Image (tube, rainbow over all chains, first blue to last red; front, side):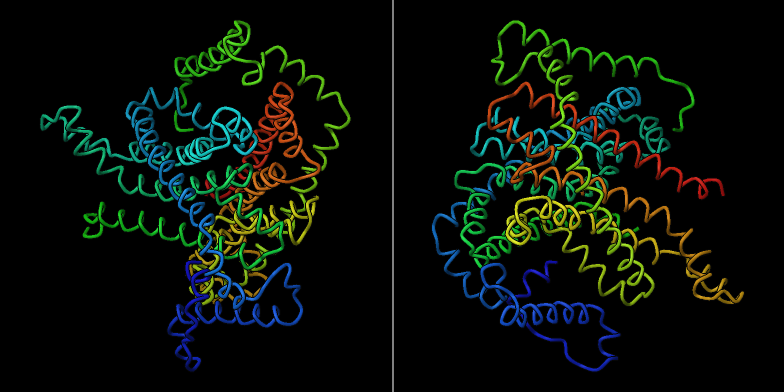
Length: 270
Length: 256
């Protein structure tokens, strides 16, 4: 999708014979994207109503206009900050809760069902409560983002802690490791891969939460502008916003992925 | 369930937690420490809940939301299963299309919601389209995953024993891929339900979600709480039904 969204700017065809495409699925993928964009462009000039869906070229042309508006830029920055704050809070809280829940078998049996019970609540329905308690400003967006992002982290940390082999724990203990040392040297490294899966899931969940809250009620954030643009039949502007948000999602996902590669490099060499 | 022995202490803590929460709610509301707009009193919510369940408008809203969900999941399954099967059968198509679909799914589709409103209007059609779009991705991705991860030896063996395409599908591919596909359907239905509720809340005329957001705008918190409780129960029933269905499909595999 990174391609699907960004490729509006890089239209380069991996041309060549059938053999080339067969050997390079990535080139074929690019070809599919280019083809879809070309069809879209063609449809935009023929059958589509420009009030509803404009061709990619019109969207590209509208980008400077839309992004030049200081209100839009501020809204994007504000939403980005909300997202980052919510993500950091979700990670810190999720890690704490996850370790507490996961570290002892009894704590897990007693509290994990409660966590799962909370997780099974369709959170959109309690969105009005977040607005009620945290106001219509950034607070409710951050809180709603945290409430979305925290669960993948808790569940993955618990799963990761659970996956530590008992033999490793026994070995650490028999070599005289204290409880803290065991956690630091055995449990945490073991939890890493699972934690990073959680981080990636949490990133998209947090983004979902923040955007849901933005769209539900917003006084100047991205949600506000998305609505304004859609209501005023300005699809190029809507698509520009969507593209920037999607780009944001891709960049943050990649950041987590890179951090993952760094933190678990030792796994690769096994 | 690995553990056969029932853990009474753990269960006691869980029940105790829920009861403590309800008691806290009850006494906070009675003491007047928290405004009833923020936290309506527990008995009032219970009262409202009973009223709601007896009212006709409630069943209309429920029917609208369930109708949207069923149509959305049906559309998503139709496209998801067929596209997933076609892509999953060819290794090359998997390499080309799977990252594309997974990539689109990674973009928060919620940002497109205003466009759905633009194309399909503000009534049920846009909710169905939005729910179907969200439900489509887990279904198609799991179908691709399920079909493409069938052990190629099974296919070779059945081919060499003279199975034709239909027999191959019926006897090998389907049984081997079914647990994964059913998981996709379950996730798709769950996500579709959330997407429909969310789009109803953000802009809608009918359905449970728009009822909740109307009540919130009217500061009618007691009734809103009652509706929220009902939707949570509904989601629980949906989850339970789907996971029971899924367990059925998993059984033959675990028996072997």
